[in-house]
Image (tube, rainbow, N blue to C red):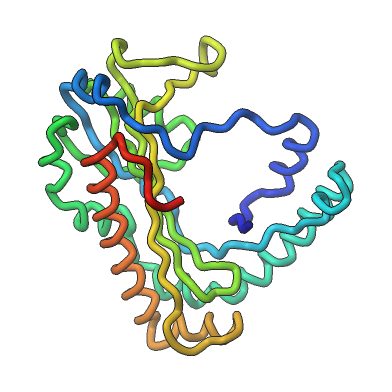
Amino acid sequence: MRTTVRNRMAGVVFLVLCGCATQEPAFIPLSKDLSQRINSSNAVIVASQKEIVADVDKSQVAAVMGGGLIPALIDVAIEKSRASSAEELIRPIRDALVEFDMGKDLREALGTRLDSIAWLHLVKWDTTYDNRADHIPTQLAANKEDVLVLITPGYALSSDFQSLRVESEVKVIPRAASLRVVGGAKGNNEKVEPLYKVKVSHLAPLAVGGTDKEGAAKEWSKDGGVRIKEYMKQGVSSIADKIVESLTHPERAPLEK
């Protein structure tokens, strides 16, 4: 199992001390009854990821030792070291993608295809680069359509730099009171449950060269990053197709994790 390391020290300590919070299901199908009650929607691509990252293999010290704060902190230290090493290798790849705009490219790849999905009744599109924690309530408050279609893409290299993963989470969040199921405590901590949720992804292995991490990093960044740029283009096109397919048949479970 792999995870992208960002501020893991605080996160792991919090989870050890407080326990794991209940998580949303990875897939939430949309019932036909609900889809028939939707009369309008707006779609927003949340392109908040600014640069490519690398996955980092998760340390298993705490798992082997049966848990506890000290083993968890050891895991954090190990993963921090691995992340630091990855950061050095990924820098030239990141530089090659400095002009890459995930929001723009995904919007172009989707084109007008969501307009033809009858149950969506799509009224308008937008792209935001806002990564604030409260961006969902902000988006819900900013418009008046029945539902918000939230498309959140991301991309990363595998921990060994041998493959590129491009993915996107898709959520349909109700704005109309008649569609809402509200969970959590009342007030500022209220959480509006999505009517639909899915994650789509595209995995592209490095086709030639770079059998070790250092060699792979050189292949990705060679010739101004021509390979990583081409793979990103293919990945964005692939997830755009899968987003359209998933929203066309929102009652179906995804074929991939």
